[in-house]
Length: 322
Image 1 (tube, rainbow, N blue to C red):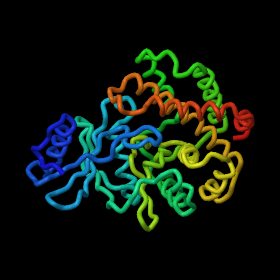
Image 2 (image 1 turned 90 degrees about the vertical axis):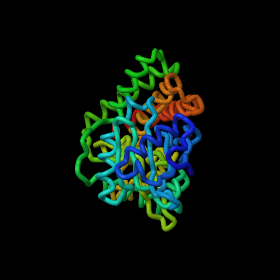
Image 3 (image 1 turned 180 degrees about the vertical axis):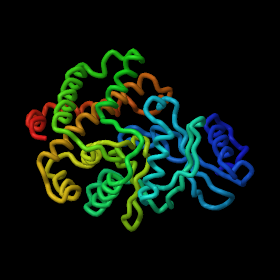
Image 4 (image 1 turned 135 degrees about the vertical axis):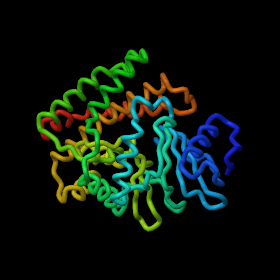
């Protein structure tokens, strides 16, 4: 690990500036090392920020520093993210944020012990892990409302505008068709109504941490807002499972029973979420200076899954049975 004053790159200098800004750390014996490398494909992990492990003296690194990448400024509000993480931490669902600076786009968290590991998709298929993750999300749904409410359709409109501003004519040859179909999904969900609950609103396995004894923590609250709880669960199931028969037990855990209408809602939300992230990936491929991240590959995968779901003969049936 490097000590303060040993920075040799632009990123290290930004990390040192953030560390020095934390009250009590400017003149302390602080050390830091580069954390998790960003990757978009085959998994989506640490893409939105540069992260660092931070230690005091020769002690283990017990702090986690995130500095958001500038290309995410249209999508992440640091104050909102930290506020949501703080609320979740009071419920025992995530490590506590200790300090943040919107000006530096930086936030420091307590770091989980090294024995914890990042969840993989196959972890989510284990009954005990899935039960713990759904319990954590359900606990958050029952908490105090967050400061902002949105739907995935609102997010799609944000990225649509950004694509126009970046002069991206189309995300795919059939992009217009996918967008129209997702518009039908929005109309169907609005017509049937939905709840708005505080939520993690993140389906990525990489934003779930698992302890050796099976306990879980949710991390990265950049997407957290008040949303339909079935969106929160739907995007989790879309990450972990491919078939309806695999999703049914998860919905039984969530609701206490299986309901076909709930599965249809989850499936439809997942389609819309795939479209959003596919569009986001195409935008990042155009505007991000980080050429080493496979944004295009990630976008193509999410758009392919969206397209396949829309071609499913049951799509129209799902629209009519919410």
